[in-house]
Image 1 (cartoon, rainbow, N blue to C red):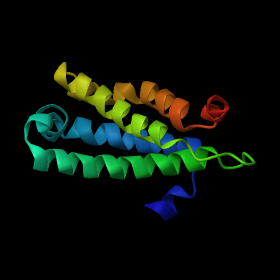
Image 2 (cartoon, one colour):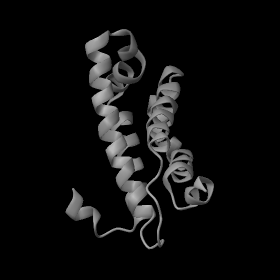
Image 3 (cartoon, one colour):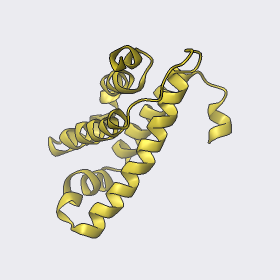
Length: 130
């Protein structure tokens, strides 16, 4: 909920979002396997649905990027390729863990995912854009 998120810093919102995302998949292992492992073979309609979900995730990541750049004068929005990469990297890390039988350990990815998202979307990424 957007109103609820306003009470947290950008870093806290990122932490909460990553944690909620990983925990949801970890608590729904059958859905996680279907989405991350079996979906790519399910055909064009399934792929179109995944693309719609990726766009939702990209929109969330754009919000993270904007939050992490608050207070930095003249900070540009991240390049669209960085936003797309943040979705693809996150999705593939989770899929890899699930394919290797680690759906019950997805929340262990939290720190690595946070670090990668900040590299792509955080204020430190601004320096790399110039």
